Image 1 (cartoon, helix red, strand yellow):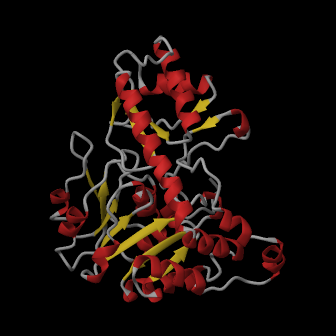
Image 2 (cartoon, rainbow, N blue to C red; image 1 turned 180 degrees about the horizontal axis):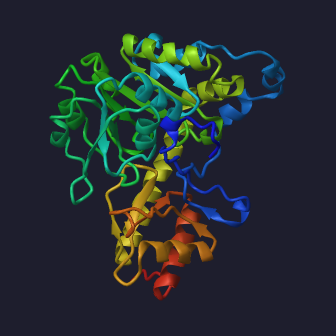
Length: 359
């Protein structure tokens, strides 16, 4: 840390992203919740040589074509949608400008919330999850600050119903921001509530269910006033935050609904498959509505030991060395072959015969 670093930021503990190994071709990479499938063929066609040649030009700062496509999907006006360089940029804007009364979020949730609160000097109220790792909305009843809810939650994978989100919105003087990074894998989106509540903002991403993690594209949907607030920050910070190729890729991904449904259906099926297999091996697997499962091995094997044993077999999962999380690992849902390889490696680690009986 240099002597020029501002004192107010010296205690910020940076977010630690999941490992991105250089030898990824040699690993089964199940640690950062990326899709195992390529982007839509429509995306590949959209990002052609002509589009690359146009990189000499600035992108459309209004993201108009993409906003029209996404607003039609959500049944809102284009003026109710804006975009970020990943959903993290939009979440940063929210902490910077929409938390005048502080913020409230769970003790076990997306790690960037705590980082942003510290970075932007936002007073944060940390609300513990229940013993079963569920989020109880009644625990937020007295929170005055902006409420941030990851739904489904990460890293647990547990989701709230839309009606539970609506309970949080009854205090109309308090903003509720729902981070729906994983909502497309079976959970209820809060977007239909926007017609009734102007104190709701929904944040989403193209990284998970649209196979565009490398493109860095996030979105926010809310009232025209809230979106105007975010655009004030966006245009004050970087009006060209979404590059030309990402705009094209995002629009093509939105328009290819059959491919979107096909990929997420496979993820949901593989999630159910690996959850049942792990439970059959004595694991505790939390109920997931995401593209990952949060699983704890049987007694006698710690989460860290399981993580290390998988790593030695060229399978990379995510381990969190934190209170209440150490007994688990987070496993991204991959292809059927990848899930079979995970189960086979797990049986080897546990000393279980690797065969299936059909009788």
